[in-house]
Structure formats: C-alpha cells, structure tokens
Image (tube, rainbow, N blue to C red; front, side, top):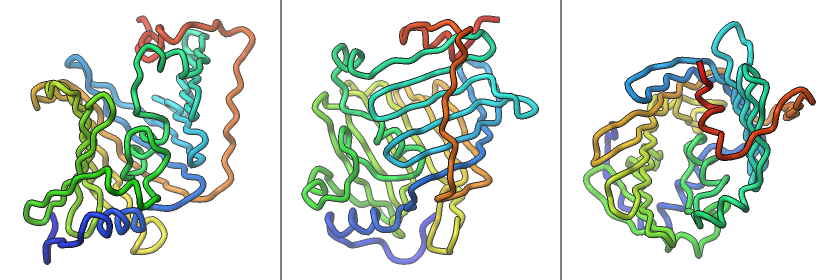
Length: 254
C-alpha cells in the first residue's frame, strides 16, 4: 500500500518517470511457479522463462523433476509450441491470424505484461514523447490511472502507486463484459534497491468483474543480461498441427 504524498506529476512527466524506473535489461531469465485455475480445476507447475528483450520469449513447462513436457516460443511475428507428451508441434506466423482478427495487441505488449512494463497497444515501446499523449490520466488518492484505447475500442487501464510502480494492467473488451486483469505485488530488488520487480503476478479472466479463472505466477531465481540458449529443436518424429489446435496442445487429451 502506498504511503506518503500523492503523486502530482503531469501526464508526460509521470509516464516518463514510470519508463525510467522500469526494469531495464537485454536478457531476462527466471523460474516461475505457476498455479493455474480453469473451469474449477487447479494445476500447478514449474515454468522456466527466458526472454531476449523485443526478440524471443520462451516458456518451458516442467511439472515434475525438471522434465519439460511443453515449450512455447513467441517472437514479434511467429509462434512455436512443442508438446512433448504427444509428440506434436505448432509453427505459425501471426499474419494469417491478424487478417481474421485485426487486433493491435502484439508481442511487445505481451512481453510488457510479464515484465511489469507500461505499454501502448500495437506499439513496440512508449519511450517516444509523442506517444505519451495517447494516455489519459486520472487520480484517486495515492493511485494514478492511465487509460488508453486501441482501434477496436478495447480499453487498457494501468494503475500505479505514488512511487510510480505499475500495480495492475486491465484489458477490457468494448462491451465491458469480459476483461483480462494482471496484478503485480511483492516488489523486491533485483540488483540494487532501485531495481524493483514484482515477484508475484495474479492474472484473472473476468466476466462482469467476477473472476472466471486465471493463474498466479511466483518469480524466483531472476537473472539479467546473462547469455541464454534460445534453441528450439523439433524432432522429425513430431507431427505438425495447425494453430487452431493450440488449445488441445495446452490441454492434452487424457
């Protein structure tokens, strides 16, 4: 909970300060313990996360004894998913999907959710001054809210405390019924006292503000700017499946 004085900075100064305080790095790796809740069922697993900023994000699901059962790789223009249990994989470009659903949300925006950064839908970053005016600022006590919309009228709400730490990101569809909320807590230093990063992230799927499911991410063993092996080998014995079958990859048949 924020203490001290409420923040009174104007929009541009506030956004610039948030950007300056965000964790900066070229490579990022961490161990995640993930608690997933969907359709009333709960599943927990260890996940290894590796990120080369603005380039490649890899998530390796290792539910027991460090044995990988699923790997997901995202880049700015493509997706790969490897299902080791069922010996199948997906390798697709985003272009075909975007022709069907012209969404602005992109790889850089997803990256920002995982690393506690502010973002604008469809943009690579928010470091250019002219982009700051795409936000609308409002304040309530110690909380500052930044609002933004994309071309499909999807609403993005970012909440920050008086110290300019990003506390939550909420993405709501135009009708206001369904939303994705990403909350950040348990901020701890990474290298210095100034490098704060949330070790806990609560992700919720909402319908009329009621939680329908989601996941909790617990970060540990954070490392910045270390060499990372980002190989993604696919055995010739694996079967390639379509992007439409990703849900089956994520939830394999019993």
